[in-house]
Length: 143
Image (tube, rainbow, N blue to C red; front, side, top):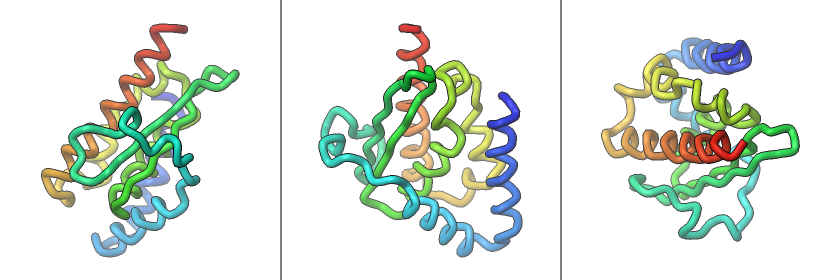
């Protein structure tokens, strides 16, 4: 993991620690989700739908001229949209290899989300992580 990843993760950990109780942390997650840039309507389709999520979740991405992944996501559920924002904080704007080297599941555990989300939400979170890892792997393979 590079320093940028560590800094982004540490900022999230510090914020979560500062907020204290889980009600405030959920509010923060929802706020993160509200700040996500809108995803184009055309990407709210079957091709971008993430399987394994209880909510509707769409993830899309492309590789810029800078060889970095530029990711977009959306959901019809506020908390899930916040989880997307959290994942994108750790992956968006990174190279495919940096994304593959990022242990998002460990970050999830460090934030305490593992024990504070339902099994369905956890499974959905891991499905989103897997989709982003697949995008990164296909990009890394074609580089």
